[in-house]
Structures are given as structure tokens and as C-alpha cells.
Length: 450
Image 1: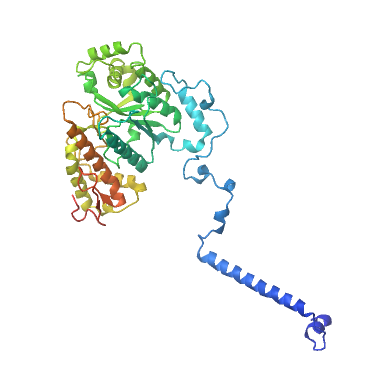
Image 2: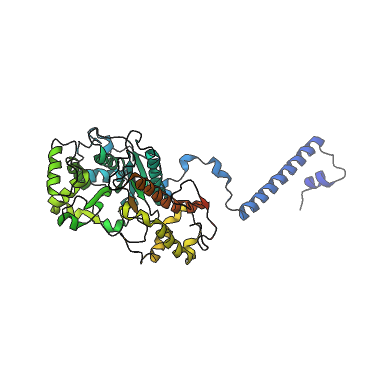
């Protein structure tokens, strides 16, 4: 029952009218309220049908954001806790002449301080390469080195590896082939998050951009090089392995090896003597100076019980392959791969570069008959232009310079085609880097520009 006061004031024709301005204000409030409710209703329906819309993302407080570690999307690059690590030790030295001790414990401690890096650390690789500090004497040397670096960057981007390019001598005496060891040691200290450091010479080119190293195969070893035991122990050859490409575990054993290895080089007071010892042990060695490759072979030969079980001599695929026996086969290899793709729609499918590894793994099923090594039509992981000296041009007299430079251009374009296809183009001529052709949608279902 409505009270008499309420009834009289609002509905009785005898009631005194209210002030006019009060009624206008009341109407305004009612109108605004209605509009506000309408907006709320529209927004609620909008958010229901478009749930991904997020107006608050633009004003999110960065301090409240989920960390990389918590999100599960990767490592936390913005966190370096205050707890002391080996980096705070004033005695730490990156110099090749000052040994590092207790490295396994120090690296483990660093990972404990940076837990987001611990996950996946066992398969984390840093590729290290470099060149001389001065411009090349060979007129096309700097161009070849630039493309060689691009080749390595492409490979690392596809597989998610970090890469460090060095163009300085980190020790004034350790030049030429010895220059790699100071860089590798420094990289180990600089990248405690990485389990492996992968040294690749500047004249070594990745020519299978999909292939991924079988790290599980090396789980009980600390150094991987391309080599053959029978050539070390039976033939005693200085070419029984190639030290221009090697994978070394980031551990104390490797630190000790680098110390011993380096002390057979120019920093040793017995450098000349080591050259004489190497040449008397390995009769096919061509020059008198002690070099890094023969030094490593000497350690394996003379101290087999200490080193052999820790060094994996990879001979099952082209961990690095001699260019002379490879570069003439690129066109045939290309055609064999295209033949596989013509019959396999999954391999022809266009895809993002980030998922290239999946297609590389899928392709393996069709490469069982390809073989490995010399005579194989499988893409070599690395083609190594040993003896070409692309920077100074002082190539081995066994072959002329044009064959070296043309071979490198072919290898670079062969590798580049594997990358360019994902961007919609290819080099139709492996000897002409300046020309590219657009790739048809279902290439190579129909004949391509080869």
C-alpha cells in the first residue's frame, strides 16, 4: 500500500508542482544512467562474442607481468641475481695463458642462480667462428667471408643457436690456426648457459641447413671432430682428423684440454721443438711448424688412454667434408631431393622457417638410401674449403684459385636455396648469385627452374 504522502505528492492534481530546474536535472540523470547501462550492455555482449579483446593490455604494469621463467616460453634475459658467482672473482681471467679450475662447480653454481637457463642447457649450443683483423688481400675475399658468416647466421637462426663472430687475435702470439683456442676458451666462460661450443672455420660452410647434430650420440664424450682412428693409430697421418670444425663440451675436462693443447702452440717456449716432434711422428706432415690439428692428433696418439674415450671421431656423416669431393655433386643432390618432394606433398608444403627442423626430421625417412660420406647424394652438413685461403688468396697449389672461389659460390648458393625457398625464391644457377627466381606454389610438383 502506497503511503498517502507519496500518493499525494506525485499523482494528485492538487499537488504543488516541483521546481522546474530540479526536474530537468533529474531527467538528465535518468538519461545518462540509461546511456551508461546501454554501453555496459553492449560491452558485455561484445566481450562475450570477442573474448580475445583486451583493453587492459596497453596499460599493464610491467612489474606485474609474468616472468619468462614462469611463462614457460624461454629463458629470463632480464634477471641476473645479486648472489656471487665466478664472475665476481677478481682472479678470473679469460686469457689462454691462465688456467681455469673447478669450472664444473662454477658453471653449476651460475645455473643455480639462473634457473630459467637450466632447462634445456644440455642441448644448448653456441657457434663460434671468425676471421682475420685486417681486410682481405684477395679481391673477393671479404665478400666470400661476409657470405660465409651469413651462411652460419642462417643455420643458427633456423636451429635456435647463438653465434659469436670474432675478428681479433685474443692473444698476440696465437695467430693463424691457433687463434681459435683463445676464442673458444673465452666463449666457454662467457656462455655458462651453453653445454657445447661449436667452432666452425671461416672457410667451412653449412650445406645442409635442416640437419641437426645427433647430440645424444655424444653424451659420453667431450669433444667431437671429423676423423678416423685407423689413420691415427695405423697410418700415423696428420690428416687423420680435421680440427677446423669441432664441438667441445663446456666443462673442466675441456678447459684442461685447451690448456694442454695451447701449450704446444706459439705461447710455448718449446714451440719449435713441438714442430719437430710432430713432423718426426707424422711423416706426411708438410710443414715444420707445430699446428693445432697435428697437436690434437699427437695427444690422441701418445696419450690414448687419457683422451680417446672422451673424444668422438665422427665418421658417419660429413661433420665437415673435403670440398673437392663434394662441390661437383650439388646439382645432382638438388635433383634427388626434388624428386623426393615431387612424390611427397608433406615435404612440398610451404611452412614457416621456425618449424624447419620438423621437415628435416620428416625428410630422413626418405634419405635412407642416400648413404653418407663420399659418393653419397645426401647433403653434406658442412663443406670445408680446406686449403683455399679465401681471404689472402694463397691457396694450395694442388688446385687453382678459380676452382676454389667458384666452389665456394656454388656451396653458398646451394645452402642459400634451402633458406630462400622459405622466402619464396631460389637461385636457378648455382654459379650466379645475383639472379633469383620466384618459387611456384606447389614447387617442385612441376618442373622447376633447375
